[in-house]
Length: 112
Image 1 (cartoon, rainbow, N blue to C red):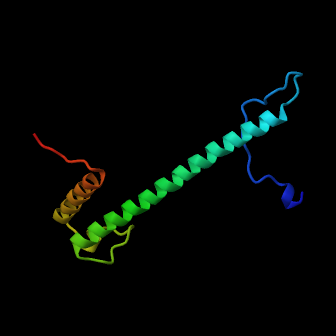
Image 2 (spheres, rainbow, N blue to C red; image 1 turned 90 degrees about the vertical axis):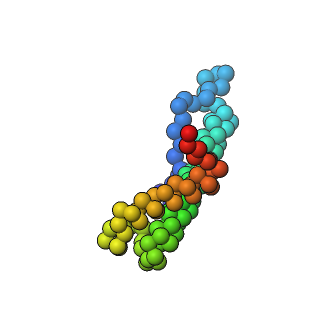
């Protein structure tokens, strides 16, 4: 088949819409497919947005780790203990991450 005839996308349809005489309603089918494609693209856009948020969160955490450890060369996959961090520094990092997230979300942790 020529590349132009190969579908770029496949859409699952639960059932084909039928006209009053029992034939496939092409207009209704096209509308159903367009609706499914919009839902699929909206879900994809949501995933992309969530991925961007994840990347920003990872950058923020890396910035906190670097500032507390004093080591600007720690990478995402590095072992923190092998890079000179101990339990006290890890505790400080954990506390700072929690407080920054709460501050960013407008959550104040009140203790009674």
